[in-house]
Length: 300
Ligand code: TMP
Ligand code: MG
Image (cartoon, helix red, strand yellow):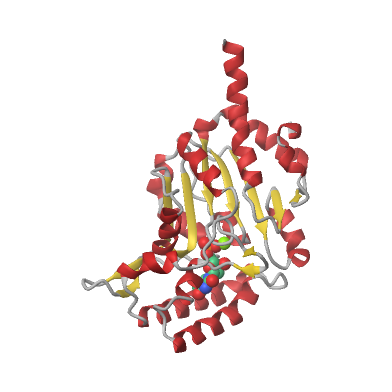
């Protein structure tokens, strides 16, 4: 079976239990592509971590680096990043210990952004001028899912308005894409006044999923899940799925690889080490096609 997915032998691929991966894949492919849904994180999962040795921006960073933010505010946002990002990726602290600190980061960052009176009509330009970059192979993935009517849920603790603009400008915001994220609330004059609804940060995606029961109810005929993430917090994104049958979890490990490798191997089925491409997810989606062609050949 793995011979059908030569990409699983790429040097970036690590699996704790390759046999188990094979079993999950077999079972998912047997159930057919009309029973699958894809749930993916956005920042550093669908977008690149680095390009030519330079870090790529998250949704928040796209705004932080733009000319919509004053220099003083930029400094404060940078300080927050320098304080809290090392905590986010610190493998010596538990999720319980990190959780309140992550809430603090998001709360402070959003308060600062709201003070900047950001204008809705300038967001498209900000994204246009940013260094935002989707991972190599993104078009293949988005187009394939759309063409095969496979729902894609992008579940992000980033900023929904920015994320949507990134995929719109990349030409892949297809109708099968649904987004759960933090959305901006603008006043009548089009200035940011708050963020809407419950805050989504990196460790409460489970709660976010459970608030959106309607979405998962609509997808109840799709109990097989391909999950893509880059944080251990992303593992709970599928907690709202009804009567789950199979889940294949692919984790991108971008930073502090040696320190974090074991914990990623323990919780993700496939771990991709410093892999800036979507080659492996694409190869996995592609085996559904191969199988269908195989069946078609049998029929004719
Ligand atoms: P994600 O759920 O789409 O990956 O988005 C969360 C990422 O956003 C997480 O890795 C941390 C990052 N982030 C910033 O870069 N700047 C900020 O101000 C905040 C609050 C989060
Ligand atoms: Mg992420």
